[in-house]
Image (cartoon, rainbow, N blue to C red):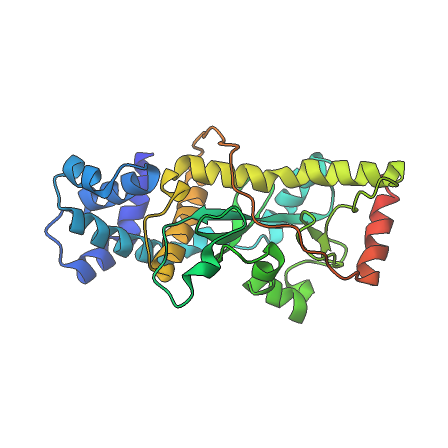
Length: 300
């Protein structure tokens, strides 16, 4: 873990000093920020622990997250080449071949935000949240994240406005090679590049039930990824921030740091209690996608 901390300090150190002109040593500041993100201790408690003021903790935390998202963003990247091959092998071993990655949404609880329409951030479970739309490979590594849409939004709406959602509309093969797909749950639309389970109306065939089972077993990797994220960065269990831009930056920074932890080979116990985003809305049928899903189903 010390190598992980050193990598962060080495990358953001020069920019950190130039921007903050801080008297707090860089190492202390980075450790205080990592501690803040990794725990639910109050800002006052963190300040006492590191012998700094509460306002300094807040100031350094926002700056730290901004620098991580700016200068360490390359740790989140879409799988291509060997990375794509390795991810596909992992999903194939889980029972669902030709898969690029898995997608899902989860809620990040927040306090009432300062914005024009704070009520929009109240989700169906009646607490304030933002939606984190995450894509991960078979090794629980984030390959894309989109954060900040209101908690009242449906998964599919947040997905549609993500960079991946827009690219799938404009140039799908730039992300998903021919014959491959992203796996998802029933919250998302069925497209040739997006595979979701058959809707269980009580009349599914044996092959359709087998298809659903294999897809769900493979797709659980994204739920484990969210669990790992919230286990390592417990601040995400409730972010006491009111500025949506700061919230989005902090969550994205945690996703980047999550990938860095995986690169260092750190073992983390998964927290299974993750607030899933809304998946209730129906979707119109895409006939090409229906045909493609049936062809995959026939292979099982």
